[in-house]
Image 1 (cartoon, helix red, strand yellow):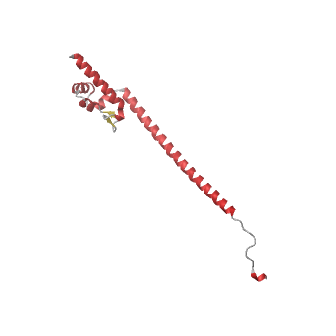
Image 2 (cartoon, helix red, strand yellow):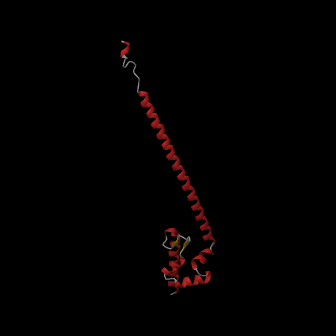
Image 3 (cartoon, helix red, strand yellow):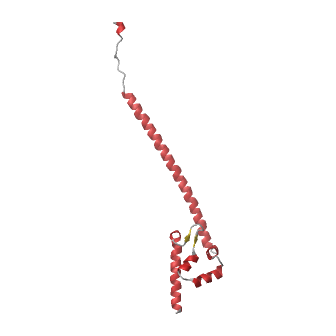
Length: 137
């Protein structure tokens, strides 16, 4: 029987590893807290014994106490914050680039409009002659 418990524990750890690896795609991801909901995962997988043991070791609430005890989690959180900052900076650069492209396009259109207008004006020629004044006759 101990072999069965070992294999079920191994299977649970594999599922936990997969769910944590999915992070934001995982149904257990808590976006507001940037945490993996370990409590709900253990409840959903009927691992009440493991949950009680972890609460005994780390304290309650399990999610905050468990994750805050790991340096790896803090590094991950810091890296994610840096990525968000870089993404925001990149988005701002993209927005400014698109504005510059739009301004350049409008300037080019205005230049072309003026050029074609000037071309049409140059096509008109004043022909000498025309109407004569009747008083001179």
